[in-house]
Image (cartoon, rainbow, N blue to C red):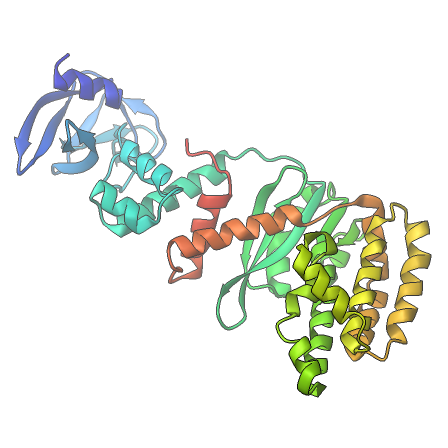
Length: 402
């Protein structure tokens, strides 16, 4: 099969043909011309017409490699006389408007950039980094339009660090389908306002469960916009606060210890924070020996393990008496970090008890956060927030490319 025929079939040309293919400066140039009498497509309204107003200067589009050489398409676009729009540049079937690369190359760049950094993708195809960024942006915009909407019932709200200096992005996730729904800059009231404006009251009515951490901004927005939804506090974040209380007690104890006692408790942080079933034999032996000593960290450890039993209850009616008993222990433990933790639990008691019945977790969203970190580390960070959001959608949004 002739090379001209291969290119014509690959580009799916109907109103155009490949006149010739020649080698020029180390790459192939395919000269494309219009077939007289064939209908062309208006670049604005997509209507078809045979009437040509004039021709534009010759343009070039870079395409995928052919025979290990870069292929360039050369063509002089027509200005068609559209009945609805007047004189307009025709829509060429091989490229999107205002692009200097073909749609095939743009899709190839978008596919590879899901696996590699944008810089490595650019090096692989021999294009500029900005070309890859434009291809990814175009793929994300197209994917968001093509993505089918499905009613939300259970959503998770969490934040991911954008960079140093308390700069965050807010992620909203469909926990039933493990799917990213929305990304917003910052984690303040304006961020949540933008999310609910984007969602709209009609689509918001289907949400029955919201899983989030105890960040006051999230709670205020959810209670205002979704008054009928059940708020469930994520187990991961509750345990995170509990472990922080244990670690604070350990640090305070460490400052007071001297001599042999200080040596015994040296490098024991993870012994107190690990789950018992994750300890190896030597760690179990050392922990058992440390627990015989009368130190505040030992009390903190036993309180932590006692709290973990709360997650085994499957009904709020059974879990509530146990949790209130534990709160009394923590409040009378003479451990300031645990008193603070107990106050936080009392303030959010309903959302924590709801977990025992609904068993909804933000674990899927935490997994998404890890994917987001991989996207960031792959590129060693992004200069602008919007570019970072585009990269997250592209790498984690499960968007259709075409």
